[in-house]
Length: 202
Ligand code: ADP
Image (tube, rainbow, N blue to C red):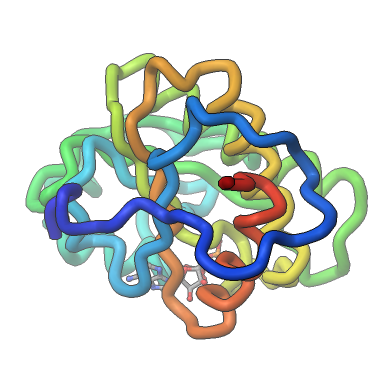
């Protein structure tokens, strides 16, 4: 799926009464919500919700490794793992994406405290940093930690949107598009519901 074929999000409908952030026209057209498999996206960089070994796993990680082919695992094996909240970059190999940014989300099965929240924010910030360091102008994120790692999606969406909003505000000249790739209908609903609070239009 080409970037040109993924519409940028524009707010349609009633404006929410309370926005978390003021309107910023420089951010218009830079956000998309894409529903489906992240591996088909022709973006400069896609983010993988990996585990600390970086050697592949289930969920989105498994899908990315299957689609990229064995060379991805080979490069990952040379990286000596990744700490929670950090991010490491590889090539995309068989993927239409140029780079894969592997980040490790917090395990939240024991509940969400400040440590988990801050680790999840770090995943988004460090992934965006890696993207801009590599001159990637389009980045797609899955819903990090909200699958096997058990982070409640209705809390994770706020961390994702806050960090992307804040990063884009500072670096809007370096990124053309950030795509939130949602896989479950519940996540699509959460993102569409919350986008007007973080990226108000009009
Ligand atoms: P984590 O271990 O970080 O929780 P998971 O892969 O289990 O990672 O889940 C993260 C999110 O990725 C979940 O919302 C899951 O539904 C979604 N997901 C699973 N497969 C794909 C895919 N192929 N493309 C995009 N998102 C996916």
